Structure formats: C-alpha cells, structure tokens
Image 1 (cartoon, rainbow, N blue to C red):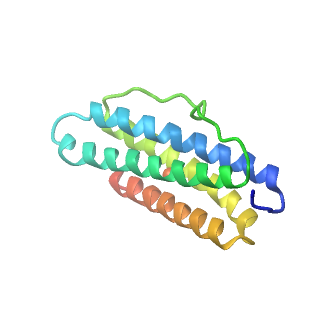
Image 2 (spheres, rainbow, N blue to C red):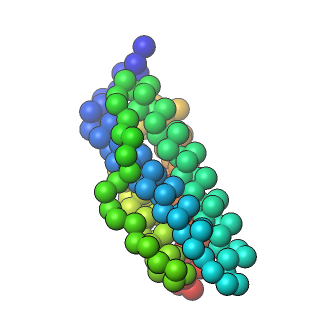
Length: 143
Ligand SMILES: [Fe+2]
C-alpha cells in the first residue's frame, strides 16, 4: 500500500532532484579518488571514497522513500557536468558545490515530510550528513 501524504507529487519531484544529486556525487567522488596525486592521495583518496559510499547510501534511502510513495525514481544523475581535474583544490571546490546543492534540496524536502516521522527522520539525518560534509569541505579548503 503506497503511503498517503500531502503534496505527494511535489515531494516526489524534490526527492528525485536529491536522488539525481546523490547519483552525481557518487560519480564525482569516485572519479576524484582515482586522480588525487602525491601526499594528498594518502588522506583525500580515502575521504573521497567515503563520500562516494555515503552518497550511495543516501541514494538508497531516497529511492526507498520514492518507492514507498509509489513514485518513479530517476536512474540518471543530475545533468550538472563533472569537472575533470587533477588539482586538489578544484576537487574540493567541486565537492563543496555538490554538497551545498544537495543540502539545499534536502532543506526543501524537510517541511514536506514533517507529518511522516519515518521519512522525516531519514531526510533530516541525510541533511545532517550533507551539512557535515559542507563543514568538512570548508575546513579542508582552509575556510
Ligand atoms: Fe548525500
């Protein structure tokens, strides 16, 4: 039985936007992990791999909510191009951009799931992770 919730179609649209960002983040971080060079490779490759794994987990949670709402989940990533670079600072800037966009999308989803404790908890937890990632990226950029 699909879950009944107000603003269902608007919610599914936003969840699919978030899913598109997660699918993009997976590809972006997996790509950068392969191209970090030198000393930074010691810590950053692992950090990027963890971010890719986190995005994979977030995508699963978002997809499960869409399915519970009887919606159709997207299977392709957000169309924003992934910048190829071997420059660590550019990688971090791109990571920061993607985390900020994802966090902003989850911020929009939060009020729409307030009446559903399970969805609310899941989305709020993801928003917490995204916000942590923004803070981490800023710290790595020395901000
Ligand atoms: Fe995420």
